[in-house]
Image (cartoon, rainbow, N blue to C red; front, side):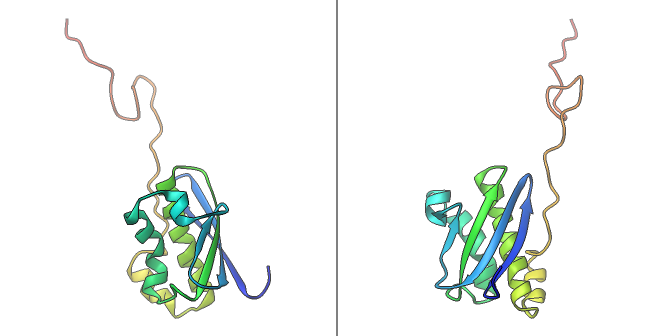
Length: 131
């Protein structure tokens, strides 16, 4: 790791994103593709990923390189957002309060509940028949 790149890890559900912040023009690359190509036509999710950069006014200062694994695209984007937030705090400690107030430094603990025996899913029961 050279001294001009900052690394951090973000997580959400079963997704893990290893994020590298490099001085640049504000482009985001996920697994070798641009963010737009990776998530398709989903502007809401794109805004979700850019949120930490917008709040700290760093849209044009850093390029973000991400290796994301596990889960679905939306969960990976949540992990990327978490990773970017943590990397920004490593870059500049002053961003911590802004990001903390928006809840971007908190790992989202919600994960899928395990399936129970005698049930169809975690809570759904099999159809009950009285007769």
